[in-house]
Image (cartoon, rainbow, N blue to C red):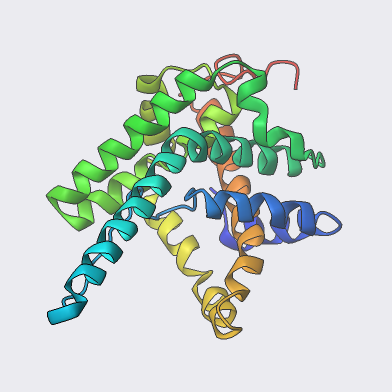
Length: 237
């Protein structure tokens, strides 16, 4: 069993002396669309106008569409990889290793295609469940929440096993994880009041806490024989 207060206390201790590198990693994760519980796909809306503004509205519509498409492409082909690298950074940071080079570790491991496909399949599953109904989509997002962390440990793990293991890790824990997210709401509201940019400074605390959560769920999964240190490439660590 894990406690929110302990996870957050551990995160605070870890960030002492490492806040600004962690801030940079969190910012990159945010920019590339990898924040937990955010939609994988953006949406745009065009306004309506009349008379001489019709052509301008059409240009803005296509411009907005092009920007959204570019962001989606960047998220899929680069964001997935950087998110897994970012989760790796926070896992290692919890052990006192602040190495910004971990952001690109997937390329070093030559595991790009597997990580790309696994993260893409996860996003598709969540998106399709969300199309069905919002609540099932949210539940699935929590079920697959640990996928990037699992890939951070073993970027070569197949997509079926990564999704399955994440579901097993979060079984019976989704409500507690949701409450953990809610416990940051006050911080984000306070951050939003500071010209909206304050939320960026809360993110390292949130990301570090989620890494602590993964480590606890990973420990429980190993104890319950859901996985092994070898499967997650933890042998010798």
